[in-house]
Length: 276
Image (cartoon, rainbow, N blue to C red):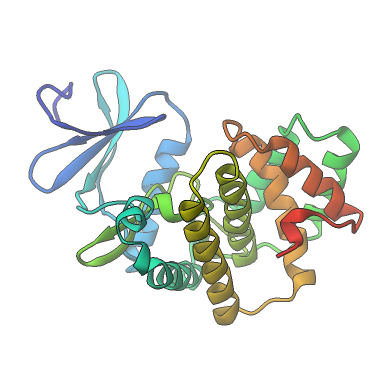
């Protein structure tokens, strides 16, 4: 592979990586910084692809390009689901239902070779500085009593990580793909949905707010239809997911809301995130 991007066309520029056209039918995801998660993204993407899930194939593993780490992927053309729904709002129910079905399909896949999610959650909660010490310890104690698992977990499964291609939905960005309990991954998506909707409350047009309220309502309902679980079984994972997100999603402005949810849920108090 070339030692620089040269004249490779830039497809997209993100906060952590840039995406380039890279030869026939391929793209290069070139990272801004080095982290151990890049190698994990290769491993998790390959595990998902080997299982027959709709993900881009990782072609050459982790490579060096211009002193930056990168991954070459099979090219998948199409908008991400967030962009697609902006132009096709009438497809919101179709997209929500099929995305939930795809997450269920992901959880039906074993991923014994990937790192355990519980260990990553434990580390993330330990690093969650905005949580008071007693609250952090309570969440860690709660996590210690929860069951692990061998299911493939994406851990960032939401519309911005799903491409709507001509061949169907394709899941991207497997950097924190792990093995774990399906409820843990579902709770993470639930936490993303709460942060997502909170973020629309300040300044977003009413039409956009209505679209995403409908999307998340249908999504969560469809997942529950396909994999039923009691509110009592899900709540501990929701607490854990919200606590871990304080570390995972530092750039999102809802830190105080997440902390207040964790504190309220631990003591059985009411909170807006559990009102619908």
